[in-house]
Image (cartoon, rainbow, N blue to C red; front, side, top):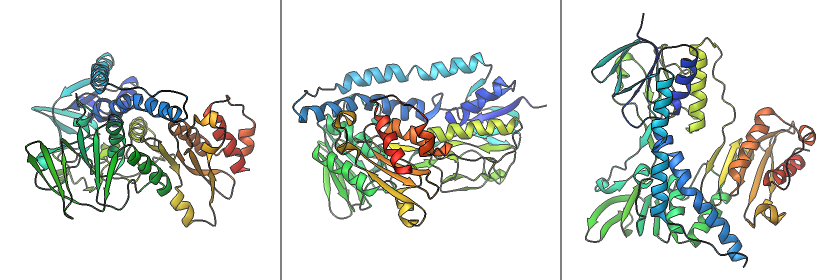
Length: 447
C-alpha cells in the first residue's frame, strides 16, 4: 500500500488538471513544487503577458482611428500597469493553494526527484506512490557568450517596475516581438538581433513581413543575420556586440533565444528514462520507459506545439489513463497565436505545407481588411489564408488581425468538427461580430 495514488512533480497546467480530476475521483494526491504554485503560465508567463499587453491593444486600435482623423490615442502608465499586474497575478497562487487544500491534495514545498518506479524524494521526505507524473515544464535558454550574466529573461521583463529607455532583444521569436511591441509603444529605443534572416520562421512570411514593417515604423530596429558575441557593462549601461562588428549601447538586455526542458536533477538517468534535446521521451499513452511514470506538458519531447492548452489536454488525458482509459492519446489540431500587433494565428495545415501539397490542398486568400471596414475596425492589413481539402472541408488557416485570437478558436472548432459549408449554412451567428464576416468567407471558400 502506497502513501499516494498519484504524485505530481510540478504544479502547473501539465499537472494540476489531472490532480483535480483524480482527487475528485477519490484518489490520494500529492503535488511537489519548488517554485510558485501553479507554474510558469499562471505566474510569470501567459497570464502576466496578456494582462500587461491588453491596454496596448486599445492604444493600437485608437491609433488607427487617430490616423483617420476620428480619435485621439491615449497614454499608458507602465508603472501603474505593473502595480495592477502584481496585485492581480499574486492572487492566483494562493487561490490554487486554497483549492488544493479544499480537495485534500497535499502540496509539498520541495525539489522532487525519482528514486524508483514508486518512490519520489521531496527534499528530505520519501514518498511512496502508485503513479508519478512529471510536469516540470521549461525554463528560458541562456546564450553562452561572455557577459551573459547581464542578460535578463521573460520572467524578469514581466516584473519590470519601470520600462527601460533602451532595450536589446536577442532573438526575433514570439517573446521578443510581443514584448518589443509594448516597449516601442511606450517610446523606448528597441533593437532586436536575430541570427536568422527573418523572424517567426514557423509563420507565413508575408504576415510576418507586415508585422515587422509596422514595428519598424513604430521605432523598432531589426538586425537580421547577426550573432551576438558578447555583452559588456559600460558606464551608462551595457554594450552588446555581434560577430559581424555591430555594437549597440543599451540599458537592458533580454535573452529570448528559446526555452529548454527542465529534465535535470530528476533522477531520470538512473531509471533508464530517455531524454533528447526536446525533453522526456514518452509513448502514445504519455508514459516514460517506466510505465508507472508519466510526463506531461512542455517537458515532453514532442513536435506538437508546447502551449498551455496542450499541457492541459495532456494532463486531462493522463488522468483518464490512470482511471482506466486504454486508448492512445489523439491530439486535435492545435491553434497558436503571436500577440504582436496585428496578431498572427494559425491552426492545422500550414500555408507552406499546403503549397507543397498543391494537388490536394487549395489555398484561398481573403483580404478581409479591405472588406466591410466598419467590421474590421479600420484594420486594413487584416487578412485570412484558408486551406481547403478536396472534400471541401477546412484543413488549416492562418490569420493576421488583432481579432485573430477569437477567430482562430472558431476555426479550430470548425476543423475539429469537420463542418462543411452546408453545415455552416444551417447556423445563425451574431452580426456584426467580426466572426460573422469570417464565417461568410469560410462558406464561400468551402462551397
